[in-house]
Image (tube, rainbow, N blue to C red):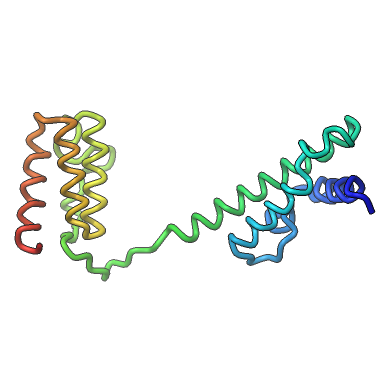
Length: 177
């Protein structure tokens, strides 16, 4: 068979698989790894990318190949996003102890719909760095929290909340170098 007929058969097969799961469109087994999906998509790109066949296919055939390739690209993107969600999300248990972070209680949390104390008086850039510092503290990374707070203070030098948070983190670092 020629490359042209192989590509057209592939395109007809993919277009016929409406609402198929990503692994089916990429023609890989269910439960495949991200590397398998990437290899399958790269193989498709080398063989069936519409730009490779612009001169050999007529308009209707090129449209079919383009549609099939776009479905394969969307399936690969879906596969990637599904895998990224499952690998990045890590459940945090209540019994998990994070060094350098204190356990928050219901009394510590601001009421729903309200910002943390002093957060509303910060500039938007400072607030971003302040949130990064909070995340670093939850992970127990005091040095990253210190850096984020210093960047927040650089963005909003007038904030007393940021200065007090910086003093707390510096105190923790002095205790546990």
